[in-house]
Image (cartoon, rainbow, N blue to C red):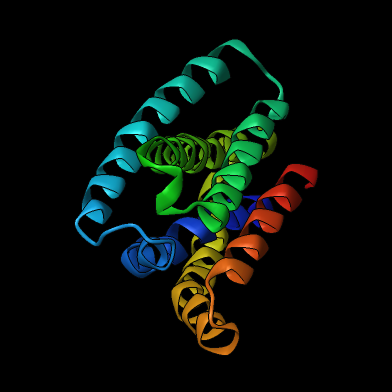
Length: 170
């Protein structure tokens, strides 16, 4: 459960600080990056509300699957988008990323209490927070290093998409 949650949260920590250079390598003007982030956060709010609604009506952990897959798809879209594709691709990527990544984040706490109970919640969340802080702290620097080595952010974006799919399997 902790591994699945970490795999879903790392792309958020890795992409956030690097969104301007990632978008610029795909031909997007720097001025659109703050708008991209705004759309990501607003879509994320919608994703979180929808996730809460669905979790209230389902007892299955499978509710997380479409969110993980949407997050993976958004990372693939980010790796393949170009300014030539136009604004629709840019905003579709932002919406998919926000809805998928932010929508699945609250599920971690819900699944911890559901599968381990309230007594274990503090221990599980403490362990998860320590592990997440470690991986999230290294996420952006590793993506930057990957870009320096390969000359592109695409390998790192592809790796994070694969990690999101791995989260589905877990």
